[in-house]
Image (tube, rainbow, N blue to C red; front, side, top):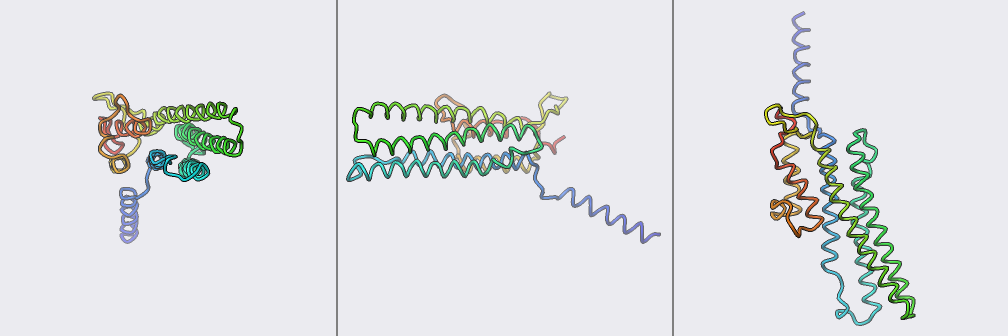
Amino acid sequence: MNKLINFLLVVFLLIIEATCFSDTNSEEFEFAKDYIRSLHHVKMVEEIGSNSPVRANYANETAFYVAVMGMYKSAQVEFRKAISLMEEYRDSNNPLIAEAADLILKCYVGQVLVAEDVLNTMEEVFNNLDVSKYGTYMRRMSNQQVNSQQLMEALVYATLSVNLVLASNSSDKKDDLGYLAINSNEREKLIKQIDEIFGEKIKDGLYEGISQLDACAATLHILLTGKHKSSDER
């Protein structure tokens, strides 16, 4: 009888130990982590754009157009990588995660389509020597640039839905602040991830003139470094 009791006690302690020291992360953490990773790919797109080809550096129009088209194709690759990080969460059983993922994916897919439209326009320009149509092409490319900016603005608002995923509805009776849906360890990992990708400037928060991409990262950073308690601080 004593052996049975001792055996059950050992099993119970093992269960408690496994529960307390489990390496399993919450879905909310995994989703936020992958969203931040996707923002890193968007940052790569910005860096590609900041090094855009200059006509004077190329011997002829053909070489210049090939370089510009290569830039847009590289941007498409980065946005597709961002899409691949978010796709699985659209089918999440957590409705907040599924909705946030859907909003984010619409932004990324939209950017891929804009880049594709730009590439098609450039091919038409390159293959058409009719100067009278150049005005039409320029208007199309101007509209494409506007569409891309609007999609980045939409991504900022989509980030607010990620914040909703991270914050739970349970409030602290002392100050009426909600708890985060992630624990302290997960929280620190996300803060470190944002800092490593976006640098010290992200700690300045939201300010006039901030880029839309940095606004996405800052919006997350403000919540994670704010006064809300983590889930394990109840």
